[in-house]
Length: 128
Image 1 (cartoon, rainbow, N blue to C red):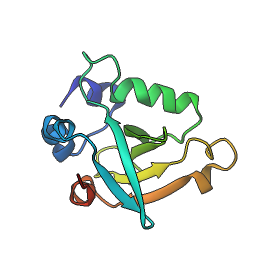
Image 2 (spheres, rainbow, N blue to C red; image 1 turned 135 degrees about the horizontal axis):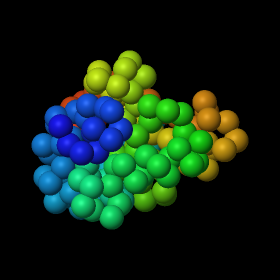
Image 3 (tube, rainbow, N blue to C red; image 1 turned 90 degrees about the vertical axis):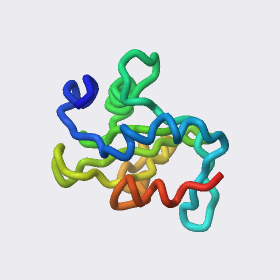
Image 4 (cartoon, rainbow, N blue to C red; image 1 turned 90 degrees about the horizontal axis):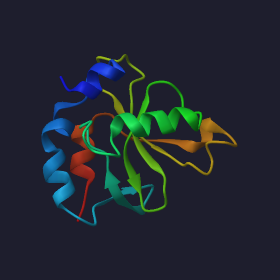
């Protein structure tokens, strides 16, 4: 268990923790959401020594009034977030959701879009 997992009291998907170095090696990754290509600008590591990491982005997300249980792990080129969503419990496999940061202030429910039920499913969605 990483320090960030202990601080946040969550269990991250092992595919995220173990695949992170491989994921960031590939630039220009994207996925499709409702037939629209969504390019990913960066992934946030679960390593505290990095200046921008999963923990620091969680603090930013709370300041932007995201629901508890949503943890940004990546940012799109448009500045939106991909989040782990622990709606089934902090120790259960989180869903992957897309959060439109522009819409979150107006109507949070309309700003959140499901992407995948598990992180491993999301990995299969990624394209170069």
